[in-house]
Image (cartoon, rainbow, N blue to C red):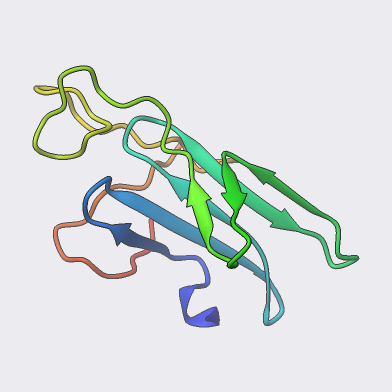
Length: 111
C-alpha cells in the first residue's frame, strides 16, 4: 500500500474518481477521494484510533460508498458529474494550489 505514498490513483472510470493516500510510517492515516465536479470525500484516522469521515459511508459488509456530489443536469461524455461542454474541475489539494487530474494513462501519478 505504501507504494501509493504521495501519489494520486485514478480508480473509477465511470465517475472519474481519484484517490490520494497519506501515511504515518507504514500505516495509512487518511485518504481523499476527488471528483471532477469539485466534491471531496475524506477519511482520517488518528494514531489513537479516532476517525472522521466526510462525504462517505461505510456499509456493514466493510465496503465504502462515496458521495460524488451533484450530478450534471446535462452530463457530458467525461463523467455524469461534469456538464456537457464543461471541463472537469477537481478540488485543490489542501495546502497547495494544485489539483489532481484524470490522466491519459490510467496509473498512479504525482503532481
